[in-house]
Amino acid sequence: MRIEFERGVIRDWSERDKADLVEFADNRKIWRNLTDRFPYPYTEKDAIWWIAHVAEMPAPTSWAIEVDGRAVGGIGIELREGIYAKSAEFGSWLGEPYWGRGITTAAARALLPEILSQFGLIRLEARVFAWNPASMRVLEKAGFKREGVIRCAAIKDGVLIDQALYAYVEESVAV
Ligand SMILES: CC(C)(COP(=O)(O)OP(=O)(O)OC[C@H]1O[C@@H](n2cnc3c(N)ncnc32)[C@H](O)[C@@H]1OP(=O)(O)O)[C@@H](O)C(=O)NCCC(=O)NCCS
Image (cartoon, rainbow, N blue to C red; front, side, top):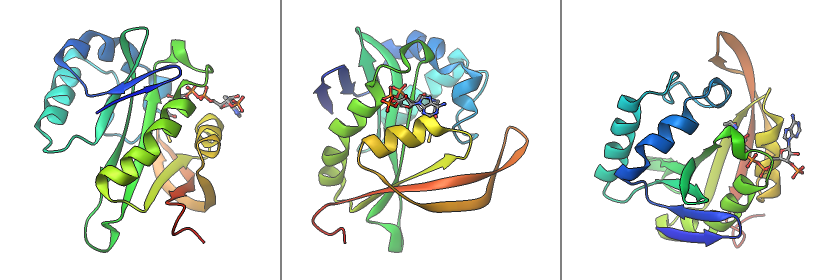
């Protein structure tokens, strides 16, 4: 995978990204908005594990966001099975020094059609903690629609929190 967009490149993770990954991912503000599978503190061991994990995927579903030649964030999907085989969970994060420049919005816009076609998907979902309006805004700008609120859906950072449900549906089948 390599997609150039106006502010950077979406590409496969590489072993050379280890130091960048630790530098940008080791951030409580990022951890607080993702599932607990994303660690905090984010150590070199975590970065080594992640890069090896993605490399072992038969078809990688997670990619680095590269800006200024550095891996400054991640973007990807989690595939589902059975009756949900045409859906996937979409997620992204970006290193804090790069926030507010439209990078994640541009990356998502560039990647979404590619993901749908490469994996034969119809629907991408994102569940956003109620305290994360920046992520809601990114999803809206990238074409996701808000479908509702999943009440008391998660416990994050010790708090029982609602999640907003957003979805991006392949245009030709969307009603
Ligand atoms: C969410 C995140 C990916 C956004 O990345 P980004 O590259 O800074 O996003 P963009 O610059 O493309 O867009 C951010 C938008 O959110 C808006 N925004 C930022 N803070 C906001 C706030 N507190 N309230 C409302 N809107 C806010 C910005 O104004 C901008 O919208 P605009 O273009 O209409 O002005 C990044 O902040 C991040 O990594 N956060 C931690 C991890 C995370 O939340 N991941 C998503 C999990 S669902």
